[in-house]
Length: 201
Image 1 (tube, rainbow, N blue to C red):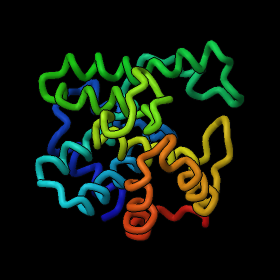
Image 2 (cartoon, rainbow, N blue to C red; image 1 turned 90 degrees about the horizontal axis):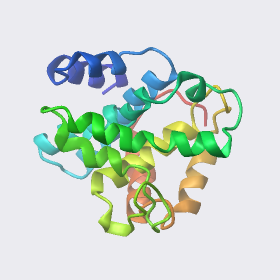
Image 3 (cartoon, rainbow, N blue to C red; image 1 turned 45 degrees about the vertical axis):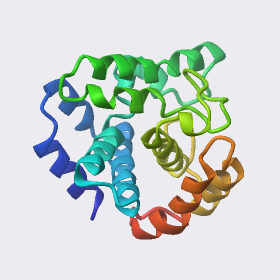
């Protein structure tokens, strides 16, 4: 299933709050990123044989994972250079901002912790709470991988995208450190071969 088909089905059927819909319907690189992450989450969930309810939860979490960036200044998000230390610390707050935004939503508050922890690292070096291993929710561990992979292989205002091979090498090097090693293997061997995003190799 193509990116737009998956995300448009979810947007039509599931997104019930206008402020969230506006966030997801942006056409810049950030909007494309949300949709692509959702597509990877859809493939991941099917490979894990999730129930239809849990699959939808993972798909929507993929769409919402960066919703906290609504609070982040646009000039920081689109800065064509490395962030300063202070700016990076501010950027890291998007996970907490996303958590609080979703907590205010009756329809999506059950996704708040997934979004909060999607930048936790498997070895405990991530943020915002330094969770480690399987103390990090499964869906957050999945998001960590697919979010990173899409960010690495996409053109951004501040960086040129890596090739698929380069991104896969990075995932493999960080398996067991930044990422859940078992999920990295599943992503590389089972998920990526099923997705056609027309990215360079």
